[in-house]
Image (cartoon, rainbow, N blue to C red; front, side, top):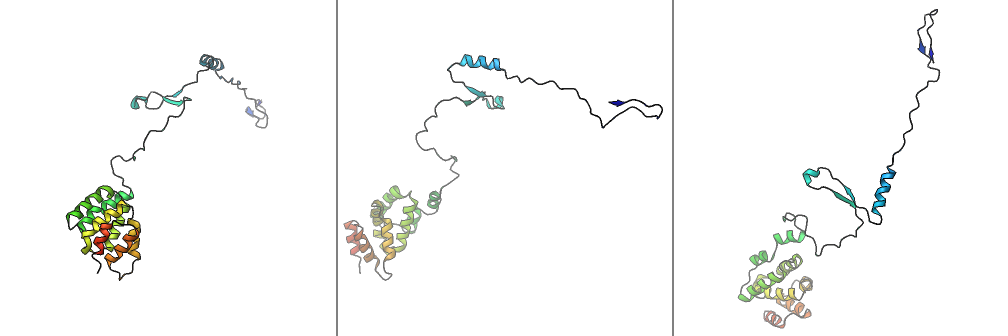
Length: 210
């Protein structure tokens, strides 16, 4: 395909770009599937399930020599009990813990301390049984806002009885719904009677009704 030299016209030899060019044919690559090797492996396995491994990177650093990719075994049962939070150092607090860190029965008793031994006993029992409940501490705070300080001799024993009977919510709602001019002991007696409050406490509150 190369044009020869033309000494008459002084033309040097060159390729004719308009003519077809011939290229050598590349040899056809024969795909090697290692069929014989794999057939030997499967024959040796028989009915035994295969065990696939992958060698991880940085094996020397992590001391992990292999990772199981597929074993064909059943999934293990979940661990018994609930797992703890990822933060084992206690840096993350839930909403209840944050609330109790700011307002708790110790805080409330500092503002409204019991005035007698019966109140101290009731406060200790209330703290032990219900001090960890943010919802109940919030309800107790709401009740103390509705009952004046002059009645604190009965406030803490009444709160203990209500918390043990799970009646803090309806009791607080009864205080909120009462008429503003109603005497507090009379309101407590009326609401407590509907909730079947302890008779001894009701009698003590009744003695304070003007």
